[in-house]
Length: 41
Image (cartoon, rainbow, N blue to C red; front, side, top):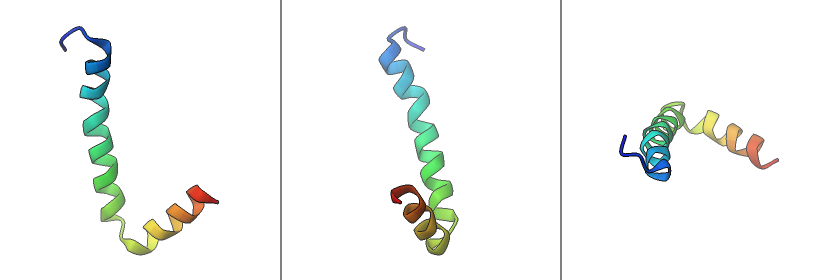
């Protein structure tokens, strides 16, 4: 870590977001559609 709190946050958040997106797409279109509907309800 380089000491800059914002950069540290990005450093941690980016892989987490990528992992979440990967899991999201692996779940399949059907589940994804249901989840999106759930989120935007």
